[in-house]
Length: 68
Image 1: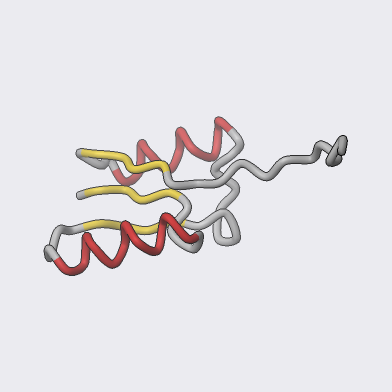
Image 2: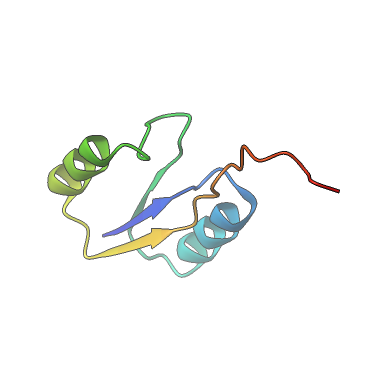
C-alpha cells in the first residue's frame, strides 16, 4: 500500500488520480484530516498503516511576508 500525504492539494490530487488509474492500492491523507506536520502524529500514522511506499506531496505553508 502507498501512503499519499497532501492528497487534497494540486500535486496530491494528480498523484491520487494516477494511482487510481493504475489501480495501485493507496491511502490518501490530508492535513485537514490529520496534522502530519507533527512528528508524533506522523510516526503513529506510519506505524499503524505500515506503507510500502510514501509519497509526500504536502505543501509547506509559508509564513514569511513578501519582501518586495
